[in-house]
Amino acid sequence: MSRQSPREPTPGWTLELRDGRAVYTRGPVALTVREYRLLCAFLRHPGQTLTREQLLAQAWPDEPRTAANTVEQYVGYLRRKLGGPAIRTAHGVGSRLEVDLRDLS
Image (cartoon, rainbow, N blue to C red):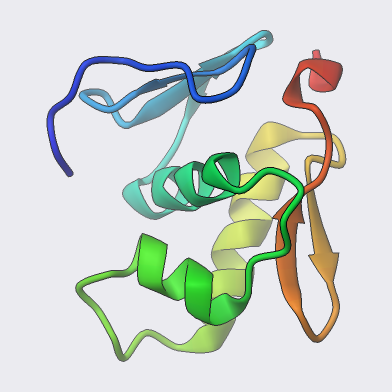
């Protein structure tokens, strides 16, 4: 994970790359490296359904043999930490960040 200064990819969010945590209107959210990478992928493509393969490539770039069900497991962890209906599953397709994150406050 590169050491970059904080940036704000979506209103209400600040990704602090040095700390591996996300901060939004409710306060800080402690994330694992994988959860953080998944959140970054979703924030880069808000409203777009991302396939397992796309999420695997972005969250596990150095581990090509990661099981596909691992993506669903970590999406579930991230969904619980964010609360609300932020991440939706499109069965048979993938997952997407569906809501304006400012609505979760």
